[in-house]
Image 1 (cartoon, rainbow, N blue to C red):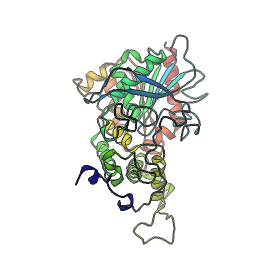
Image 2: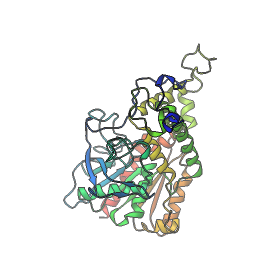
Image 3: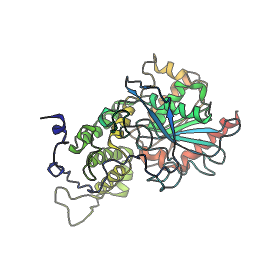
Image 4: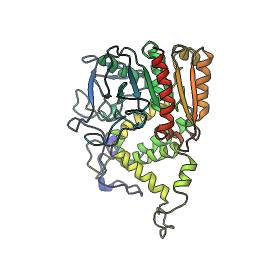
Length: 411
């Protein structure tokens, strides 16, 4: 049996098994943005054109393009710029409405906006779709130079450090020598920490929210289960599925991976209050695939992600989170943190977050303070689990606003 036959590429789609969830057959093979789609607010930058981009893990990309969005105006002294870093399934559309090339509203509306903590009337705000993403930046769904085909399974491993180097190129292009603040939660917070270690002189403040200095064993375990579920979808075809038709892509695998993650993002309190043991159809209970309301919720969010994301990007970015460790090849955690000991840090915890529990942020605080640095730490009493950094916008914004105003006031 050939590799293509083993992966399902040589099979009639009708012969491949269907997951009993029966996700809509109209779901796209990939939700990635492609050239020719509506651009929306995206801007694009070719990073180091004409030169290969070497990655931390040893891979090389012959061409790298970054998609990014900006809001507000850069001040004459270029001292009001804030970089917002997105999480796993985010993108450059951190603020604004849906439509015109953007499948969803800005993922941090309420934290970003007029009169908000990050205010386009005061700040020059930048958000970059990360390397390996699927909303305009170079990733697995991008066309590989020299082949004319999407990278697919050939796309190399990337890390948060690779992402930050690309963001630094965007900063150079925009004329930002030093960020007023670099802000982000979860995977975004990992990028924030790497900015501090890699470019401490280019940041006036750091706000790594609901994140950790290194991925924990439990976080890696949850990620591994989700990635495995995705890769086992026969329509994943080893990562080379882009030539398939609608409904014949790895929708079930990506949706299940999303469901696994969604369970870890929310709290038992939220699931119980919202769904308890309610059934979708109270008369259908004994069939093996009759659904509880909570199952319907997970299926809905799984299908929603399939429409706007790419399965290979999910694997690449999820793996980058597992690899996150600011001490790697830097001697020790203390020596890594010491590089940004003169930069004020703000970190937040969500009291109900079991995926990135408060102890991870207090550990960060204690290490920064032990090295002579400043780290403010606040705990937000939200029932929304890890997603609280996205949903508790009033509380998150309040802490960020005070922190950023103090940094601005200190010049």
